Length: 451
Image (tube, rainbow, N blue to C red; front, side, top):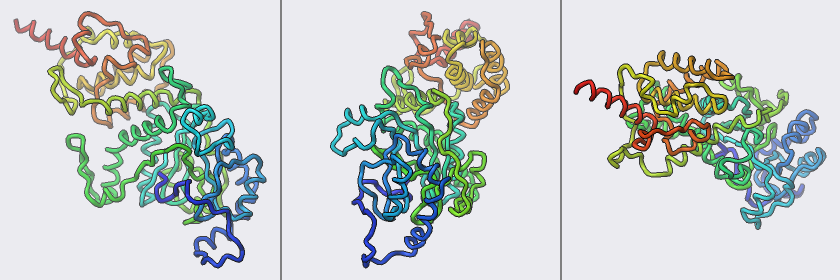
């Protein structure tokens, strides 16, 4: 959330100041200039910044204005040269380039795509209060973990926000024959909006409780939020082409604090005192991601975006159906399940995480008891040639049970074909969602009993 922390990088450049310049210098500027050279001269600080700069556009900021673009760090000495000229902080791109110095504002989308190697997902959290940004950051870390993204980096923005990063290596090279590298900023924006939607309810409740002492409730999908809460809700800043953010361990002009990396387990206890530039001990902001670990996150975000961008959900009569209506079925037999769910329950060699997502939403949509769902999931997981880790399954169940019920993906989604479980029978042509299949089968059986 760059908001108040970051200014647009396209501002008029300011290549330092003349010693004879008569412009009055603020106390904040005096303070940061007093420590900037000695701070950035530290070898460990230089190493942290330079290591992160690889393949990125890097632009210095001269307290209020940015340097000329494009620019990059070819050598560590380049960094010190910028500082000696008066730079107070360094900012870099989320995008990774074959050669950042070839960038130009005249380039069209096709040219940028050919020059772009990839992009990191950078989630920028901005709020009026650090406490609220901290809560939002923690919820996003949990949401990422729910989607199988274990390796995400967190750093303090230097003021009142946090930056979270998911490395490029965690994303698939392509989805549905579309190159992921060419989908910037569209796909990062979609993921950011999706995560924002996922955490919104809990964020409202926790901010409301902290602000007013009362927990805000959701009614019909809309939160009842007081004016005080609305004014302090953290915001997720959406990225734009060639978007810049403050580099790890770069100083912040307003606070003179360092943009320090924060271990996830220490996030809730983080204090601005931990960002004192005289006390920091640099560590890597970029985690070592497993290849493709963000695939499920990307796919689910794209499916969510496709669903929310389309028409309102409709029932079988073509009428608007804004919400999922709870159904309670008694003594549901597995024979009532659709072929795709039956296939999944036989055990999965590949696509286990997507299958788990389908099963949990399917069972919850049928209003099965939590213990029953856990028992069914455990039985299914044991049938998998390579079972999912128990802590992963438990975290998924825990996450879902804290959320409102949602239907599993509709039958026309790629979920089922992608994991090779779509084996339609004559009944499938009459339904749009696996849950509808079971409901119809259940009602048909009830009607037979009554006859």
